[in-house]
Structures are given as structure tokens and as C-alpha cells.
Length: 454
Image 1 (tube, rainbow, N blue to C red):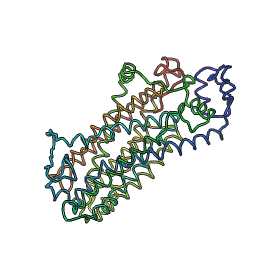
Image 2: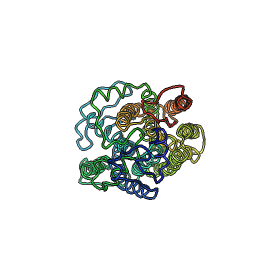
Image 3: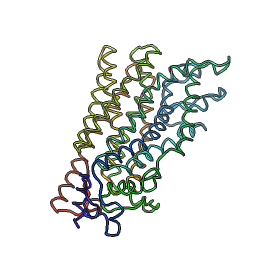
Image 4: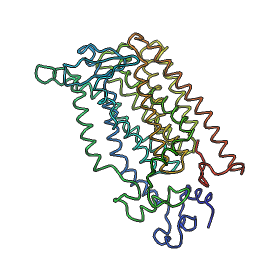
């Protein structure tokens, strides 16, 4: 029987190997799954792809759409109708007009509606989805899949301004429902609720519980992920075990990366239509329409970069390149003269910021050997990212129009910090791998054969 190091390497190569030969099954288990060929594995992965992603992408796309539609509603008349200015917008109810809105630029008195806008479901679904993806795919398969999940959902939010424009044309009766911006919230909110109900029936289980796989496919799906040993099923960690997992200093680095990525994404998502209309001088309809093409570009380029990351087994260079792209794009948007050139800069900025959301999550997942800890890490990162979303919504202020210099430079500074943190931490991880290879330190993360994937 070969050692664990060679076992992990042979599983990564995914050839036609008997599981017994690579040390993952004993004599009593070998008859159940004697071996698998590359073509059989590829077919299984395609089956998993088509089953895992459609519902995840639909739910998250609607979640993003419903979360970032306030800037579309603002230029559709919300600001004028209820005397709302830019900042953090806390609107109690888009259907009822008797409650006044609140606005803050720092510490705020939170009305009861804040519990509706800071929905726990928004914060729980994303880490759960990343966890599900991490439980089905290998270390160097996750970047492409997490990007596919995030970018497929992003298409929905990218076309959100166009949908918002269509919904804003709806007029019903002669009261408050003649205000088109209300229908943006109403229709997109109903769609999100319907998708949430459907999710209970269509979201996938973990590999060991997937009823749509044959017993052989289940065993292959579990075995191909194994680095340490062949685990028959996912073991839910206790609260104490989860606290031990989260007491890892590397989570601080992952959280800083994700906080920066999230704050940059949300700052642009919240205010891109406002920047197009008030900063670049485009009309209302054109501002809505022009908000979408940068996201189409971001989706295409992000998937290409994620594929390169998995194919060449490199994470840090891709993340740094995307972060620097965001810096260049924001500088073009900020300092170029013609609106067309500034709009081109928005393409680059949206790509750089959006691509690092799934990229950062994949980076964190790739440094963790066990499925259980990946779930804890994903939840911690995205919880901190929620604070980044709040921060991102505060940095573009009304008094800074039309150039929004403080908001732009805050985002640029954070992206530069992201680059530095990613470079330093990645070279630290590479050094740890080298020390293990040279026999100068023990197993990484306490798992024989595991290597970081910076």
C-alpha cells in the first residue's frame, strides 16, 4: 500500500486506479468500487455540474438583484418622491407611504425595517453555497466552479437595471402604485420569495446523501475528494469543534481579503447607475441600460481567469492581476475626460472587483484540507464580507458628486491593500509547502500529504 502523499497525488491525476492500490479502500471495500476511468469521472463531474448549479445560480442571482436594486429605484424617482439622498438608505416599506425614510452617514438610529433589509438569509445562503461546491469538487476544480456560480448569478444582477427600467414603467391605479420605483421592489421581492420556496425541493444534498447518484457514483464522488482517508459521509462539527477550527490566524487574512473584495463590489453596485447619470451625464434610461454591459464583460473575463487559475494551479497571480485591474479601471473612470473613456474604465473596474469575490473564496477554500473546516471558513469570510457591504454603501456621498473622489480613492486604496496582503500571504504559504517537501516541518494542517494552493 502506498503512502498518503502518493495517494493524494494519484487521486489528483485521476487515472484509472484501483482504490485499494492507492490506499483508500481495504480488502472488504474493494469490490464495491474497484476502479474508475477518466472518462467515467468526467461524466460524473458533468452530471454533478448540471445538478448542483442551476438552482444555486437562480437563487443567488435573485438575491443579488433584490439586494442592489436601490440605486435603480433611486434614479427612477424614489429619491424625489420621499426626499431621499445618498448614503445608507433605510426604507421601512416600499408599499406603505406613511413611514418616513431614515438616512445616515455614520452611526444611525435603526428603524424596524433594518431587520428586513439585513436579512439573515442573504448572509447564510452565500457561504452555504460555497460550502456545497467545496464538498463536491477537488482543490483545483473549485475556482472555476465558484466563479461559474457567482458569475452566472451576476448576469441576473447585471441586467437588473434593464429589468428595473421595465418595471418602473408599470402604473396601477391613481395612488402610490403609480410610482414606478415601487414595482421594482415588489416584483423582484416576489420572485425572490418564490425561488426561496422552490429551493427546499431542488437544492442538492452532500455526495453521501445524493439520491440522484448510483451507489458507485457516490463512492467515486467521495473518494476523488479524499486526501487524508476515504470518508463515508460528512461529519457535522460540534460547536466546540467549530470554535477550534475558527481559531486559526489565517482566517484573519482571508477575512481581510474578502472584506475588501465585498466592499469594493457593493460600492460600485450601489452607485454605478448614479455615477453614470450624475457623474457622466447620461439620461435616466441610458444610465440603466449602460449599467449592464460591464457585467457581461466581467462574467466572461472572470470565467477565463478562473479557468486559468485551475488549469495552471495558481491562485495569487490571478487575484493580484484582477485587483490591479480594478485600480486601473477606477483611475480611468476618475481622471479621464470623455464619458466614453470613463465608461470603458467602468468595464475594467467592474471586472477587477467582481472577479475577486469568487476568486477570494476559492483561495480560502484551497488552503483547507477538510470539508468540515471549509464550511466554517466560508461562513467566517462571508460574515466579515457583510460588513464590507455596509462599508461600501457609505463611501459614495452626495456632497462628493459628480466625481466622488473620496469614494473612488477609498476603493483604490483598499484594492492596493488587497494586492499587498495577497502577495505576502501567498509567499508565506509557498514557503510552508517547501519546508514540508524538504522535511523541515511537520504535516500542514495536521493532514499528511496536504499542500497549500496559493
